[in-house]
Image 1 (cartoon, rainbow, N blue to C red):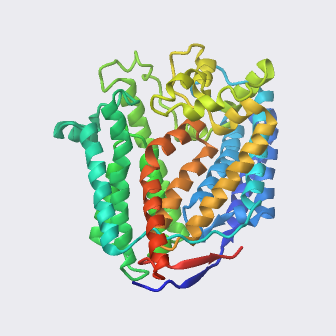
Image 2: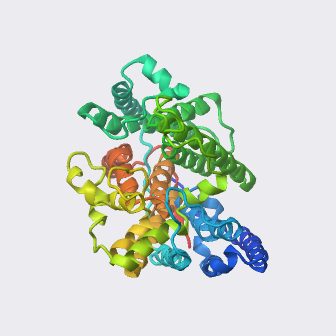
Image 3: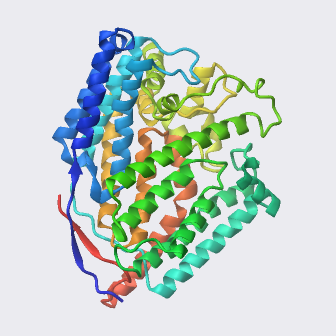
Length: 490
């Protein structure tokens, strides 16, 4: 086994890209203001831009950090940049895209929503830097034989889940041919529920083999065919959830982070190119999934399904999936008219996806209430209520302040664990879990709960096994294989 060595982590926060983006956005805002229109209707856009710039200048720790690659902090930072800079700029150039909203809320509510988003980012930044207690490095790669045995066991569990999800070869081939049965989105039986729990073990088991493989090679070496093949298998196993893009993108981000930290550092140009490709492919696949699911695989006429109209553009989708201020404004308007809900939906949202136990809570969840608010009927449930709007709907401004402070604190803890990770599997695991948490910037509480309930078990299991192994190994004054101790210096 290799003796552990101390590696000092140097932070490389960048502010120039943020300043450049803000300058471009400010110029576009000024040009739009001269023409009147949306820029005059949404003056809070300037406050949104100013808040993002001020935090980037005053709080270096929340800037883009090259050492963390696509870790949780950088992912959260990108999402906040989309919310506070990109979407407000689109707002003044072309106006708010209504999406599924019947009517875009009044300008006063959209402006209030912009201010709330700026407040949320400020509270996130405070939470991110509030506590700098050192994080101990905890390796996950064990002795080679034990690591391989665990990985194979995980793959076997995942294979059982795949068999439950795809009872025939034809069903499996049809799914990956773009013609899968994705119309029952929830576990309808004990077998389908077991399948959802078990399938993540396959991807994680393959990633464990991949992490052990790259640990044995020298830093700077390029990916070998075997390593690339393991990545393809892991992503394929992650892509078996009703064509959900998130279950593919998040593992990819975690793989790139682990690879960059432990094998070959990726340049900013490559990272930008990688993200651009992901965005384009994600948009194209989203269009296909919307049409395929809306027409029930061709069983319903597109006109009947309301899909004969021009499809949304990339910038329109950016406003929808970036949780633009118009969607916050719907909740702001409702609070102004009826008041806050006082935790009524928070518990329901957290319990929404829990099998059996969560069923009584679903009608009271934030997603259910939000869909009823925008559609006027309780039977449609295809939209999610973002984390920020749900906090505001339940607790008002104090909910935003406390919720985003805790959000920033959580992302920071995950971020630090990624940075001190002593092996590639630990880096991947913390990045994977932390990135799902970071997605709360645009996601909902119910989606976050779903990820924890169904997708985090392989990581939890590996942490527990490594804890037991560490206890026994440390008792014998030995070290784990392929690890390197790191110390974080702020």
